[in-house]
Length: 487
Image (cartoon, rainbow, N blue to C red; front, side, top):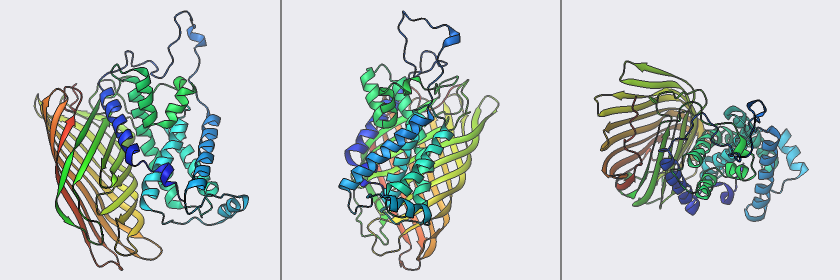
């Protein structure tokens, strides 16, 4: 149930390093396509003196055994590190503890929120990326993440296995892991002339498993990630500060503070690119991460298309609709919420005029959700349950000069259950941002953020929490357009 705080939570400098790698690698890499989109972007160039006839061209690398052994080795190393440094020590695994967990019941644990909702999904993304970098498909890698999580729950710790950890590690970890895997490949394959060592280092920071297997030579022979046209992408990095405009602390002892934050977003596989298809999971995805000086990881989300099909209307509308898988973690200054969900929705772009485009996303579904109060004034403020959720995003793009972004994520009327109490919880996260390009990739953004929670629990007198802020950010946007796709 416990994942090591030192091993599984990306915090402090590790967060900044990850964000910097994503920003300088993934966002910049989107500008340059491989010279031959049909070629394997991970293949090692052959010496000019060696000629292989087509009929003996080696098959792409794929190894189920290597993936399983690497996951097991990672778990053994993690267990030994946790056993040596983490207190209380729940990692003195024995034959007796394994036998007890095999025959015992699965429970909902109450480990710290960041461990369960951030550490475990990241640990699951490592399992997933070990499998992916050994040539396995998305669904095969999800199976390995599921199996790896079960092995850890039974044989990695002495405590009872946790069903909430099994969900967040395997499914949340896979939805997060595929986005990291594809961004690492963007850094490698479309690095805009960066030195090979810098690209390899950046990719290894984003996906350590991919970096390890590339150094061993195996991942360099994996199957090609790109099929047909390369994806249309839009990335941006924001650095700035915000001040609270209104707040309601509710049952939290935390105090509202000004924030210095870095905010990174990458949208991959935007509709409208000629020749691009959505045949594989996460051929479209949106990744967002925000870190601040107050709570470290303030938000982290990954939402990708699992199954979908394109549609069009005349010459002005292009879109894709289907089933999305999502992982969301949100930690404003007063409360936290995390969810691993499946939704039905669509992404589309509509040309309003020759220079004015509207992009949008809408999805709705359900997720396994956890909520908790930061520095809670009483017990009973950390709950699990299945909650309906919706996501809405709109971007109005004016040529190469400005964009207006509106986004909201709502976890509505979730019936939260726990062994000791019950209640309801509603959370809304919204933002509005106006971005104006000054010159080249340099822009300024004025952003409003709101995080609101309404809840009802028998043992908590307060019923609301809210934190709103307004901030000014320097924004780095590579590329001429502000995310619009031409066709």
